[in-house]
Image (cartoon, rainbow, N blue to C red; front, side):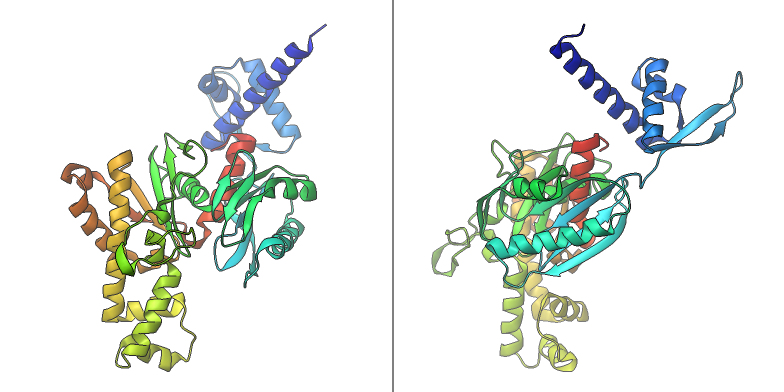
Length: 402
């Protein structure tokens, strides 16, 4: 008779083998059982048993045969991409946004809910409404829910330690969502999630190390080292938005309580505020004329259109913000020697001019050899980066697929 310890060991071994086989099929499929055995170094009987189990669960399917020089043709197997679905949530923008995705990160359904000034319990109720709507749209079993949250997040405990934007402090979000939805729940800082999304589905797929700077309503960074998210010794890695970059009387009060933080001079709100001042002060500016012509409220969309139309003061403002971001990139590149830096968030819409200013400051602030090797790119995932990252977190944690 097996002891409890032996049974637990067998269970872990079976789970390990299942994940190993599924990962090979996911990455290499269509693939034969013999190919899987060669890749994994598992016995053919073990592979056959695991594949049979996956077929019964409808997670994989047989898709024809490959002729061999000798013997019977090999039956090929691939993952059924929508055999399981995943919910990815982004709570860091101007709206709460969510998607239902398949196992490849392909978005099947979307839903957005306005945030307005929801904080505390009101924000939680809005999160419930968003997830309720997404679970109703799921057409296959749900693998789990991933949530990107702005602020300091203890991913291991699933606890939001502090989110000024949502007015959550020591908030047990994973516990609350687990009790309501009875699914695996993963709560991670939105910038960390964004980095893992870019690493899995975007401009980080060909590198082992990656930094993603999310510049939108706030400024922060996510770090992937050796294919793993780096949270720091606790959970605060990447909080570059609260590094002081301005001193003296011009240093503005930050939401963290300090003055002169990077986030007080580079973010979407500051940009819109300064654009509003440009339009008020200079009635001959393209920005002012653009607002009058379109009769639209001044927001980031209007600012980006006026910038694209050639407003000179906006161009100087974006260049200044780019240089300040470049200073932060130089510090990151100098400390970590990560050669791929990706810019995401609403500020990324200012494209090459923003990157050129960042690169200019990088060249001026970093050892020339390191600066030459450091690439700054725009995210390829756009506004979906956090939601796709949340999907990738679930795929990694629940199935080991990425």
